Length: 59
Length: 437
Image (tube, rainbow over all chains, first blue to last red; front, side):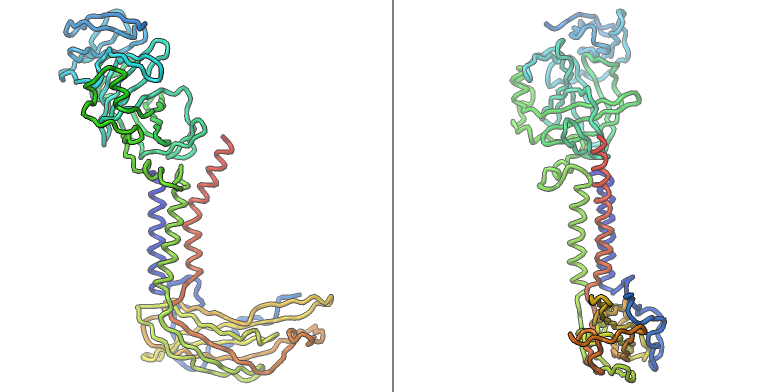
């Protein structure tokens, strides 16, 4: 087996392990928020629509 | 028929027949093993060996017919690499030239030196006569241990060459490389009985079962050859990598769906007033059992809010610490008609929010919602005929679902891209290489 195929198999194995760990612990770079980020005391709310522009983009 | 000459060994005095006179450069005495230079009239000893002369599978001078040509065994060498020891008998016919009989673990191969060079389009694959030949294993180094008889080059024990073998079906291409040249040999498997019968050498491998030629083992491993024989297990690295990627993707999908399965879910409904005050509801209580898990928060309006938006402000309140993890988003759905009457829509009536790595604990899922309607500043009067383009109501129900776990398709497709890209790039590169060749 060539080194290239072996390296690719290792590459696949690494990403397989990462995928399984990410699924188990709920890691994701695409999340809208992160549970390990700053947590705030309960009360009030985060501010509706902060920085958001409403209305359609249709011209 | 075969040109013969006789010389006397300067080392032992033995009488040696030179069978390929005029072609032979080196000759190893069959009696004492001394290596002689016969390229010049005054034969001289190049090197004197003390080892006993080897017992040859085919005696030098024996003749046999293979592939319709009568060959005479004129030279013999024992060679080895890190994993195998084999012998090669040099055959000669004055009209057909030289051939090799390779003898390895009781199996025989007939070797023909190539005058053309196979094309290499990947490290582990070469193309020759329209066929792809796959490397048996990584290239290795081969050492010549002992030599006897005549050779057309200045052979000597200890000679080292780089070797690689490529297989296609039962045939092998052998590449030998030294500082000066690269030699290719095409090896065809023979049955032991074929060699015994042809060369009238009943003792040659008489104890070896007459195994089919296709069972001839490789001298550089053979694992890949067996893999290459499997259906769909292809002719080169790229194909192997494609199937490896497919297997890995199936494992990733299965593993992620198993490890990322939903472990708990709650739901609730809330009536949202358009342009009314913010309202709040506790969707339910969820428990994260692992060190951390993903949460999905879904709001579904069933497209009931047209030309409106609903701001959503989620808080996952840890019951123990009263600390909140926040996430917010907006459900927006707009529709209208252009001046030419064509209809358009934007957005949709639902929202999924994902919160990664929510730590272990029990959480109340609280959501605040506030609805607004959108008015086009250049407004054409809303057309209400189809009930789609206008604000039809001032209050609607929103369904909230919160769940722990769930498949992360973003991560999955990212990994699919990471796994699929290398073999696809290699396949594309090989395709371009083939077009060039």
